[in-house]
Image (cartoon, rainbow, N blue to C red; front, side, top):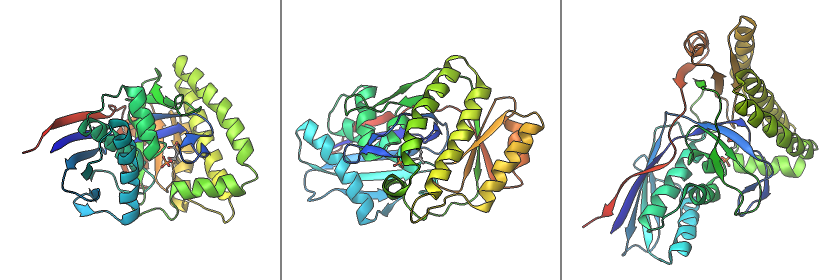
Length: 322
Ligand code: PMV
């Protein structure tokens, strides 16, 4: 039996992905920018099984729900079609991130799965092709393939991949407020926003120029501009989400308190900017010098962890099992 193990880390978006121009191919309505971090990896083992009549998927040792297994199987189908192999596989994932709490667990998960599945089924993919494959599992996974800062391009299937960006040396303080599952999946919430929010077209148009500004800030090594854009864009995304019908709100009063505390820290001279993905937890973009004092201050509000730029997806073992 052929097997491969791959590891990948989550990424936190500075310019957010929220909305698709093609749901089936997971092509984003606009590009986005993120930092792949050096904590909370997912490690995934894919083992081809000649006798199996279906794929299996376990997460942290527990068989996954039917819907989750179907998403894993759908990605394996893409790999199988390219490889010209029909064999089903057993997929075992260990995730060190609290699942579904809006800390991009699906990004690390599908990036690790794409890398392990490609290796197990014998595909040699370069990082663009791997990023495009990971994208089919979960859009944000396209960026976790890439180490550190990554831009994910909008475009057609061939054009929509992530690649590295040079930029300032940053740290993030992750402020964990809740590890519970989010009330609405990002996939469903995105669809509701696209279908019902009158702000959606403005969001897509403004994200394009926001990304241009963020990439310029990276090129100029301008942390302050990148930070301002990060917080602005997070606030805009959450405003859009709240404008859906029925409304969705991921931020809690505790999340808002962290945004306020970050504004106070800035007023006191610290370089720090808040963001949040589809969940209540807040991530603070900061500099290497300010990471410790910012984390110490925010520890009153939640559990804090300082992270930096992390590696891209990597195959860490491969072989034939007896
Ligand atoms: O990849 P998905 O479908 O889980 O969407 C993730 C969307 C956000 O995390 C909220 C933003 C982003 O760009 O990662």
